[in-house]
Image (cartoon, rainbow, N blue to C red; front, side, top):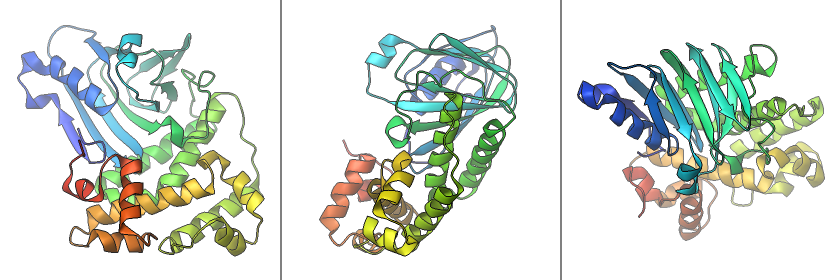
Length: 314
């Protein structure tokens, strides 16, 4: 499955007797390598609506009861390093990891880490939104204290599910228009992860204002090859040190500018099929097409043309 494409998957595509075996294949393609077993005998049905927002993946899962396991042997097969968050929409579920258990009712969410064993229990039919992001894109480094903790309907537990549910709906309607929201989504997910770990991020209104101004300036000037931390600092009338501090959760401001350029480029490639790759590179601040190709492939694992064609490089 192409993780950078909107995909709808359903067991309705196969005969009833093959439904669960097919479902196991679907969840492995959509998320990571998993084992699964139904909780009852008889007919099984499941459906996944997957949509990307840059490097963030949003999957709405609706299915009959099951138990899903990520085992040590499955982890050893690949190098996937994701942080996932399940937001319960209907029914009930349970997340188990790191010797903890999080019970999920509609409106609740919980994190789990693909690099360690976990189990997901669903005793009845359910619907969830699963948020999946590479761990390297989040400010959180040690996830052992935040997994399998229920974030309920109060505080961040109310804001975060509502944001990602709305983002998923918007991305399904118009995938490319949601990419500018990626920095906000990653920041919110990092804040929720910190809250789950019982490490409260420091609330600083002044820093939040600097962040919003800087992000707006970066978006407006992304076509400028000279865009760097000095230009952003001057435009926001703050020091380089302040910008470094504000954007530490994003991996640094230089990394954020690079990702913003590449996310904008990917959106243009998909939305404007007739626009030459060289033009896209220029509009996203690259003064060299070869440099753009190298950066794009390093970020997405494919060339710009392969992205446009919907294929991955081998």
